[in-house]
Length: 86
Ligand SMILES: [Zn+2]
Image (cartoon, rainbow, N blue to C red):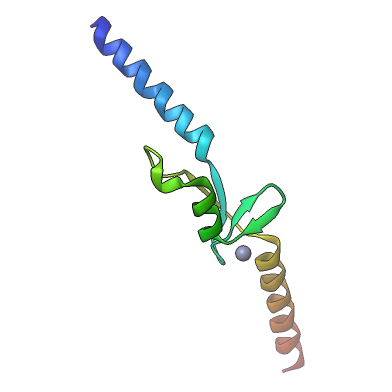
């Protein structure tokens, strides 16, 4: 029983450290990854973090980058004005 608990706690600690080490925010549209205030190509980030060497794959949190948000908004505005004109 004591051993089970120790194993359980160790597994939880490992899970937490993996999460802290590798939580990445990615844009769901262009697939770039946020690093600080920049959005960078996934292949650069993967090479830099060497995420393929991690015990568990990095946790990804999906978001939309400013560029993609901007293009969605401008497309939406263009569509609306097209509908108004028709
Ligand atoms: Zn994007």
